[in-house]
Image (cartoon, rainbow, N blue to C red; front, top):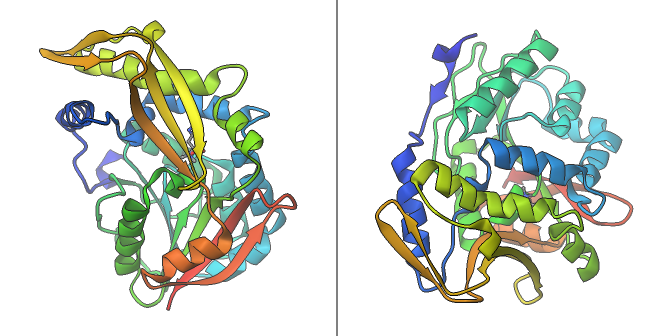
Length: 320
Ligand code: AVJ
């Protein structure tokens, strides 16, 4: 298959990035959307995070998927259109695909066209019989599912990695609502969520001793410099990650070490010493709490799997 088969659902334009950056940095509490952390360098750094001793998230979810592969695949069943929120370049996806008996199609959805097409090509090579139908889209916005022949009997969304944790409850709710309306009566959602746990474990996971997570955060400033003509000096900013016990989330920000003015094109942005730019939330849940939350949007918890330490959970939710 070639590029012509790619469904371009939502235009992802460079001026959107500029608008979002200027909008986020002109607020009283500065913030930047976390989706912009994942340019080529950011995605590479995130892959490195996943290899860190301190970052338990990826390897724990993978272990759950491996250990319970057949039970998980059994819930999704045959003739499914498996729609992954993310490019599908991960091992978790392969574990799932290996265990599904007869998927009708596999639909990876990602904002980065290059990343998506690469991942799709790799999957086609590994699974020659699988219909791979990539969709370039920002999945926080509604998008159209591709047609497939013969038609799938039902749709299953796969949203691994606790990516949902990046979203505030209202944003996550909106996403679940969109998913529910795209699913209709027949579908389900397989989702990975990170669980509440010891604070030391959480802090280490988001502020590792090698500074990989810090580099991942600060790369957002370098990206603004590269793509939007900014002049951030990364040495004058610092990565900061702290757990908010009230909201059950890690809050990641980039903190200015001094009073300074930064320009982006012809825009000047002022920073006070100690002022932060919020770049990421990483919400931590309980299985019951998430199930209760998802119920508001029409999902019912059908089954869940976790690891021996109860660090992470994979949930299968179905439309009531
Ligand atoms: C990709 C959103 C799941 O929240 O654990 C990891 C992102 N940021 N370290 C997470 C992240 C810094 C990650 N998610």
